[in-house]
Amino acid sequence: MLFLLSALIFPPAVADDVYTAMFKNETGGHIGSVEIVNGRINVKLDSREGIPESCYFDGYGWHLHEDSAYPNNQTWGFGDDCNYADEHFDPTVACSDLSAHGACSCLIPDRDAAGIVYDCQYPIDPFTCEFGDFSNKFEGGYVGGEPYYGLGEFNYEDPFLHMPDLEGKSIVFHCGTTVERIFCGAFQKTTIEPMTERVQKPVSDPSSLIADFGFGHIIVNDFDTIVSDFDAATLAELDDYLPGGASCYENGFKWHIHDLWEHTQNAAVGSDLCGSTYTAGHYDPTAACGSASGNAECGTCDLGDGSEYDCDFLNDPYSCEVGDLGGKFGKIMVGEDATYTSEFLPGLHVMYGKSIVLHCGDSGDRAICAKLDMGAFYATEVEYQNDALTVVAATPETLAPIDCDTIPGGCNNGVDAAVSTFTWTGMLVGAGSGIMSYLF
Image (cartoon, rainbow, N blue to C red; front, side, top):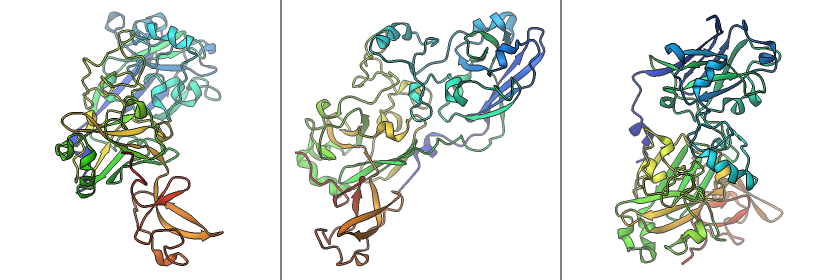
């Protein structure tokens, strides 16, 4: 039975938290506000009084900062008071020069030497951005520039925001293209009646990736939906090749996104062929640093070495490797179709060419792996053109078999009549809903 895990781990909200930061000028006059609820960001710039024209002419830079302890217990600051807000909130170790993350001062020189510079590519790869870098996430850097000149109301959406992180943080506005801080405010939390759902992530291109294991698939749709459908009877045919045989999966599979795929085939079986030589370590761009992380910076600059890794996705999503799907959602149970949601996945083209590795549920041994392949849709129409099959791809949700009666000559001419679906990956790679040939 298909079920939504998100419905189980995210109970219906009884209220929505609203985080509001108010801004004032040096004399206490109102400037504006930022309000955030469910990833929706509303910016109001109501006044320029007391602000030099040079600050707002090109728009303000703005960031989420680490602290909110302003002088005299104020919830706002102006000018130098905004230095109390510390530096940019950066739980994922993206490391601009103004990051508050403690490891960045150590990491940046090595990154500079390697030619790695801070380059926020939001929303396709949100992990290249400090989560508090609203300037580079939205509108090319500056809010309220020409023709607004520091006034107006602006709305943005950031589905990657983890709302509890706003507690104790500040928004700081900077003068135009400089780092000079001009006004700032600490977030205050209130609650309202539940509103619409969280903002949705943008649709990516491609809109789906599929890891095809032969006995089932893991389908990653857009940024946040992961579907598994493992057939126990078909999987049992591989028992002789799995570590521990059927006991490998009787308590489910642990599962992770890995950094690499070095096989020519789309799937492989066994600890050696799914080992680090072919799949590398876990996809971990945010340096959560589990024991099998593929992030080379783990174990350096006070980042973890895996010994204290503790994925607690619901309460602290940054504690999990991005690719630690098992740590986030639990094991995949064979024979139980499931759909999972994750707020922390990049655009699919970032994950294309990586792999998903299934580990034995108890021992953790690598058991079965498959490439995350682009465009592995199922065909609902086929036609012949110049004696070649052309597959008209449909979305994975349809999963409709091909009607051989619609093909001239039926499913002959090199096409197995017993096969009802074709796998499409930009070219027709062969008949069958499963793997063309396992690697044993």
